[in-house]
Length: 178
Length: 236
Image: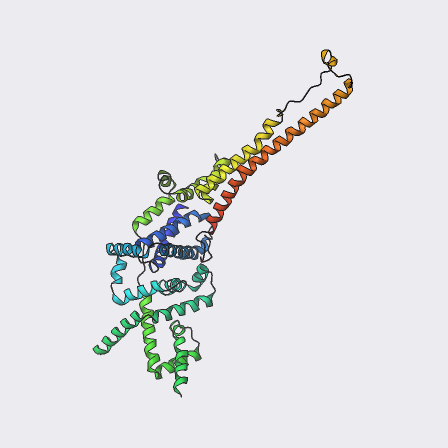
């Protein structure tokens, strides 16, 4: 059982952490969520249908993120923001380096500002490339609901003024070069 | 074509951008979409923007957790390690590791399983309160049955009408009447003893058991309702 559990961690860790990372600003918070999720996996191991392990993990991650955001909202926002800024300044992971690309950084911010379930569906489908079946199972929705939410999420991203500005800058510089 | 109908057509086409990017437009719809985009500069620009964002999202990096987290999780799954750290790793983690132990068939008694249940299912305080209530209730219910049966609160009167006692009986009553009166007195004493025991039990339930039950019930209600609003329905 331990070996199977460790294999499950290896197999799914990136998906769990990516979903958390695109919902929360701090990498440490995403790690906390991942730890909480995998501890729950260990506790519920005998009861889980292991053919649906990934949807189960994604569902627990989704719920843990919602709980985390709700708890954070109840705290003092200004103190929380200060802590987040310090934490972010201290981190220089590969993820943050990649975020330094302006469009990528704006895109990541825009995704984090999406409401649920738009954010989770967009991250699961477009960032992680998960199947519609896994998304349906994890969020307890049918296929048409998932597609409607996904398309709305993309439209909300396109409506973000920062992203449009970045695109127009890239577009105009490309035109200049041509 | 009028300007308003052109705008309506553009709006309808732009709603199909995501379906087009997913490759899910059927043949006729795709022809109409491509034909419109070829003629309409605004829609072509929107399609380029949508495609650029779509590809940028696809290229976004995947995140991964730290090695320390993995080590911690491996430690949690390792029973030996968890037992070493059970003082500060929290009850849930300990329970997870001990769940494996509890599946071993021998040497696991009823009270161990009961203790395991309370640790697993309930927060520590609620579990402790429930267990205390159970113990107090058992003591209150059991004690009167053990003590009262052989020890009536008021001793019964035993008629002894022989010898000198017979001389003390007033002339107006014969010995048989006095015996009947004493038997009736004993019946009354017995009845009063039983009423007294019932009163004790009722007082115990009213002032000890009921308040504890109400406290436990309200704690359980608070625990079950707190933090469940707006949650996605899930296995946990």
